[in-house]
Image (tube, rainbow, N blue to C red; front, side, top):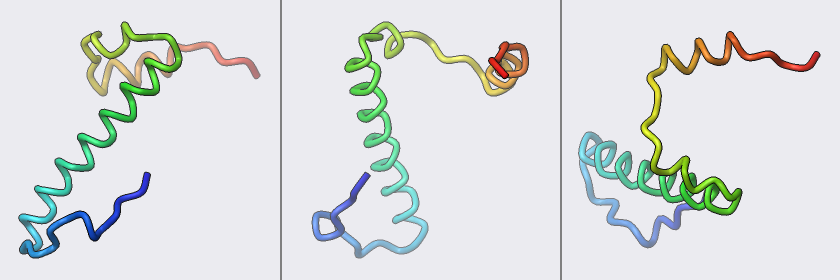
Length: 67
């Protein structure tokens, strides 16, 4: 992912910059993931409610992986 700094206002105090660009980062990542699941043919993933961290870790621990 590339962010062109010339396209952004860099006149923030540090805490405002973290909040603002944290939101920008979240939006970019969300757009990337939606595009990825769409291209992979799994549009249903973009409308499925997520699971919590504990459930995710549990599902990984319970998964069978080829060794």
